[in-house]
Length: 289
Ligand SMILES: [Zn+2]
Image 1 (cartoon, rainbow, N blue to C red):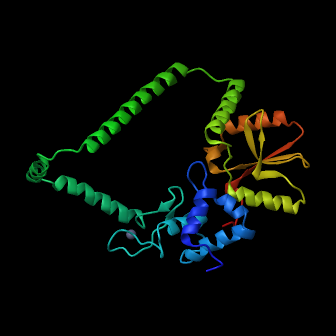
Image 2 (tube, rainbow, N blue to C red):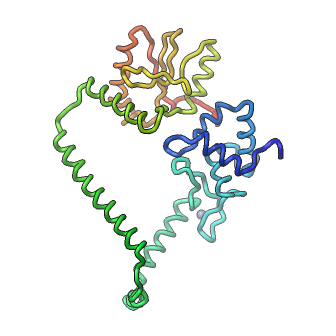
């Protein structure tokens, strides 16, 4: 087993080195270091999860290793034999293969609640009578209630603030200061701030540099305009070129959001001699796994 890490070793390495602040795995870093000793990690992940399709990513494979999953999971509905899909956003497997399997089950659970007769309720009540709750249980409940109170208060508090702030518009300068303060606060609390990478964009920028025999800053070297508090998806000081990579959440009703338009203006003012290009991910044909 020289060529591969053990499962435990994989778990240790990833937990120690490739965790983002939000708990997710920094798959980008693993891919980046595909060579040398990092390659072994990559190969090991694939080795233990060879039952998955080629499209399965690092997060899914790692999930299988942690949870000791050795074959593709099946729909939880008993008479259904379909496989379940990986839920990218939740970072775990779906429980049912399809909505129809799931709807059936929620309808059933609702009926169970209705069926419980008065007689049954009385039985449950009797069974619980005389049972004393342990100190621990009570404490736990108190803590839970306290938490709820706080959250209720904070909602009121938020409303108050939002009311008092209604009509007020932050100036460009205020917004810039707020951005910088936020970055500073995060950096003080959690260490360095890493911007979010889009792997498709990295693939594109890499090819762009290769085809044009140039070198821009992106991905791991993503450039930040410190004064404005903005990270640029791609900047090339030789070509005097800035590229922004837009995912669909930058659009509303098929139009670029005002926030992004404003941001572009500020950046263009800051680098007046640079060309500013936007790429909409949806329209790029990428065969990147
Ligand atoms: Zn099913």
